[in-house]
Length: 533
Image 1: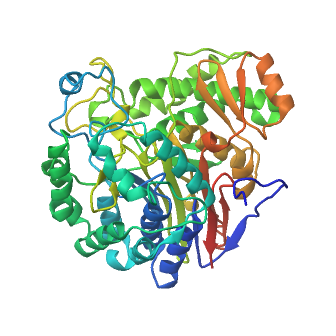
Image 2: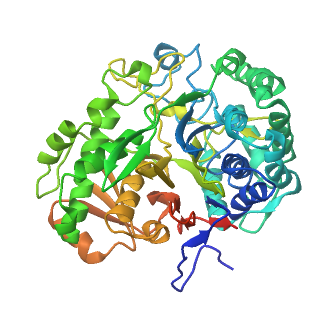
Image 3: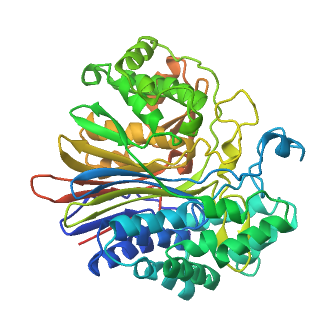
């Protein structure tokens, strides 16, 4: 049987619930979050449980060795968390170039930055959780130890990762094959996969509230591996890391407020693009103009974002400058009736998981974590199940670029959680994962919700477009053909993609402030589901 081919139209309905909801890209992970809610945990506990389970049941997109970000509404207030790690203290542009690289490599020990996921879980749990971290991690530990049947989309991405990593040379990549294959082959849909090493690592993280990963036995194993294989990440880098609590940044849009996190993430790109498009009367535009203006606004925002966003300690401009009405009006005035060709920006693919949770008390979490490119760097620490991210691949080696590699610096980051409020009320979390598709997905989902007034499921179901570079725009195979042709007549170089993987995967939970009822939508491009009660 082919679990990736469905010959007949299928559709999902929006899900309604009142006591709690978890939306995730993998059913077992969503149910892990619901299990914790039913045990008395709150939305934060459920988010951690779901996130930990995703490192086990969807390792193709995230892991313990990745980074995390969150926006959460807790007891009537919005909070932001930046759980992204910096580059090692001993790395430099010169050191990388001395090894024969003219740009940052995507795989191996060089692009590995300090992982932020374990400390993010611990920080969220300590500040906002109701249950202990050990208890919250139990569903993930159980799946890792006892095994679970691999879901279809995960199996497909696992196969793609296997094909990619088997082209890499060097003993440092062997632990990946020992950890993530079954008798030397990637698991297929329905195959049962377990990782006792992963289970033990999660147990140690829970028992020590993350400390083992940064100052204990796990940190020692990571340090030893990098010493043996000529990497830069050290035990000192791990020990020095801390999560940063930040204030979300937002803009008014169609009577609501759209919130993102400040740099080093690219949420600012989504806000800039929305600020530009709201200068136009979308309610009086035909569909061709509607999409044309979205694409052009996104191009402008992305071009500016890639040129300036980096670790805020190294940014040369103020965030407020890019979110101002003056900037939006100036950029809007530059949009013509035909496609433009801004300064080229090449946008590589990425792999990420996004989840949303909500509880009976009205607390909600928008959470995202990633190893960046699928499993990440291809580096796995033997005996731990820890796959390390390759987030450092985004650093520039050009000394004049704002995102140039420097010791202890956080790079431009693709993963972004989103949140909607209206007045003093929380409406809910939303997000679209997938590398540089993320701000594009955020923009399209927000406009589907607030301009087209679609329900959460329909807002995710709607066919998407993705700007690639220059005048190149990819559209999904379900994108209306007459609109694709009309956009092509405006100068857009339209490419129809038969596979939807490139267009991101999202989740949405919205709360009705008057009734307290939640409405959720989950991504049709993934294996996901909404678990609710």
